Length: 614
Image 1 (cartoon, one colour):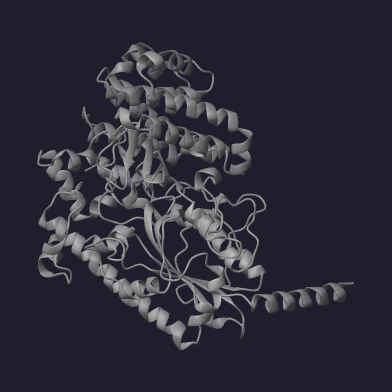
Image 2 (tube, helix red, strand yellow):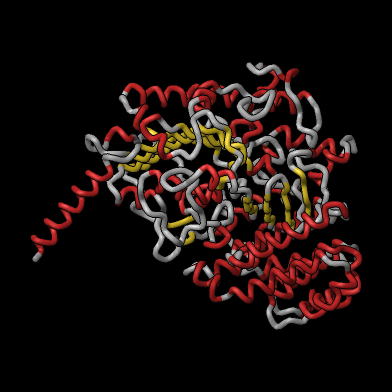
């Protein structure tokens, strides 16, 4: 019986390999941290990248390709799973707890491997998810050249020269090292100050794109030398938005709209719905990349994935061009918390800032290593910026609407313009439907999600779908006038569910001084609520409207925090109240925290303590 089973498995493998041999090789070449705005292929004045431009001349250039998230671990978790990460518990950068893959679903290269492909990754993973068995090789030495003769392959080659860390230079470095790109020829984005520091940083970033392009050219030459060029479909894309301030980490187009070029050789042109050399307007997102690779390889897309193929069998030009929607998300980046969701429909972009008082420029240790970030903040504090340049450091509107064709840099919020009220309502409803239908697990505070949901995030979300919808509805009270919101907020603040109370207070903070009718109740909640995070949100609300000092409540909450994640969430409130207006001083003591937290050099509590403790 054992011999029969072994023979059956052997013949099944042979059949799989034989079938796979009739399929294309597929290669991803990936540059880190660059939105499409930095490439000459897309924007006048962008970096020339002749290797990529050559691919585009004989391939497809996608005008509207989107990372669903503006930061690497979340973007890459989306890519490898084909799933929206807030649905599966993988939305925080970086994770404190690895999320399991949804039941019955593997990372997509596993399906290629099972179908006979040799799967290799060189070398970055950075997933927030647990899984095994998708790669034959994954390391800085991984290569498709180790496959069996005639075996098709899927290979990912990562290039890190454009990564944010490459712009963490000093003033001395800037003075001693000229750029290849002429800083005087740079066009500075309207939300940035036009200074020598910014011009140099722009120019240096373009130099890194040129260097990356040359590295990609060397890699593609290897394919050519191996005689694989005409058997291989090649994707080039950026793993999320660019690294100049207000790009990476932020859910603007500069953080989400990535370059994407796909070269399909003549042998496999039947898998492309449009002619080589075309520029494609249809929208594609990272949730779609895995399903697209599977479709190109003739492998069925699992139903548990959120994305759908945009190339391959049965995808028509009409299918591709009618795609006009993209959903985006930004949550915690290292120690800095936010909760932003975006919905793009055609030329209009809707942004929902669920905690608008957590302004974009809130301190983040890694971010402010860059001279451009430091200078931008200094100029804001000195009152030297115009309105567009100052937005980064000021509380945002709870919702924003942009016409991307007319306002590609998203500085003119149309949400309050009656002319666009119909568009606003439609996109608001589309986004609301999206976060409720998943459902979106970020409406659970991260320490709650870790404690309750991480055994099986998808199952937990479905089981708690009505509860999460109620949290979203409570959060959306902030979109109403206080007269219309008063009844709903009053009910939320006395709810038996601490998370409804939590979101009721966030809605009050978002509304601001008009919500001061709840001040007395918030005072009682600071003193008497049985939930630590609810007490913090009550203190936060009172501090933001200037009706009570927050320090005593924050200090107690930090000392009562049960986990490092909970303490970091509370420290985010302290940082916001220190950095924002009105500004509050805090005397936070390291000895309040367990030694293990203080010794975690990469931990978020350590990052925040470095900010508060001289």
